[in-house]
Image (tube, rainbow, N blue to C red; front, side):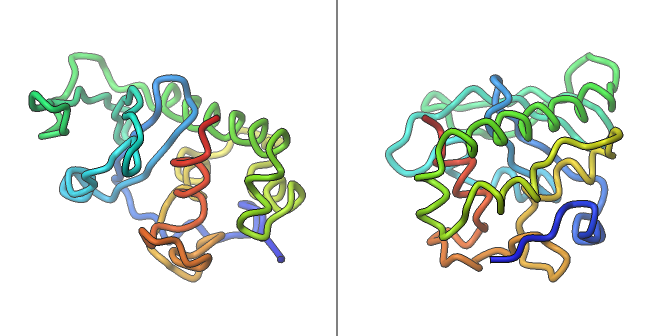
Length: 175
């Protein structure tokens, strides 16, 4: 399998502003085009039969949001926090998720093999940058939608939820 690095991939597939859901331990990230799409994801942070993980919410402008939940911990909405926007902190969090995944993929080639991938394939996507990349570039591998500029278009590996390989690996790849 041939994989393009983020330096070679276009970043036009992801429109700004966008929303991020990041695991509290920087071990999970989803990208959404808007709040409506985020709230439509009923399994956010957990697949069927999985325990939900602690999540934080940000937008691409650097604002943090607090989740509003019902008694069963279903996400009902987002409320802006009183924190000032911190674009750099959000970018650092996205990079921390990429760092976590580099380590995960290096140590779990068995999970990659399920998708016909090798550690070398994922190194091309999650390589540490030589210089800081933009937030948009940092989150591109996590953006689903099937555009031709994406590293692995949605459904390319037949994922049952049709959100793409990185969704499956980051969503279900927790040890």
